[in-house]
Image (tube, rainbow, N blue to C red; front, side, top):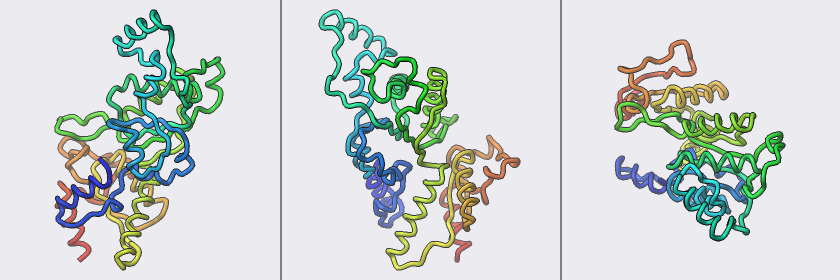
Length: 295
């Protein structure tokens, strides 16, 4: 979903006009990473990742996908047994066929969890081990220097759906990637940039956008910020850290419609970073509570 789609959805639900520039996703902040906008990047996510990268106004000028890399190098995706059969047939009839015009990958952008995890994990690690070009066979020393830049967002390990138990999120995919890369290369995976909660850039960017909206409407700079979150391990930790760094007036409200369910889990009283200011059952009750305090 793009900012424009979310703005339409919120406008219909709330009965007020929400503009796309007022919507901030984790991916939105990537538009600030201008050093990478002219690089040739692999974009990993579900759906049409290339279109998403451009339409998010992230401004990546040259993008590709896992699917296209597998087309250029058909021997990479061997977790799929059907691909093994197709590769064997190709070799027997015409030998190895690679895309001679393949442009090496300069950076990897991980927007969200893919559909075929095993294929994405394999190809991403291939790119990390070969400086972005699977046509170059590693000589054993390739893991002794830094890998190509990797940018990621959405660190949530799980998210809440209709299922009783939370589902794997992008954080779970990243955990697999980090573990596999460490096991294969012997080195830790190093992120060049991380956006989305709980990282400072997310809150700083959102606050900047909120102030832009306020000033555009003739209002003064925002003095107090209320955060409504549903995940103590990610959302609440991030806001508390941001509040600590800036020493600003920020108030945390955790709602019970997402990952956190008070009847199934308790907040960690020994970890102040995970503690909200107030607990409310849903967004409506939270908003009413805030309006009552501010009027």
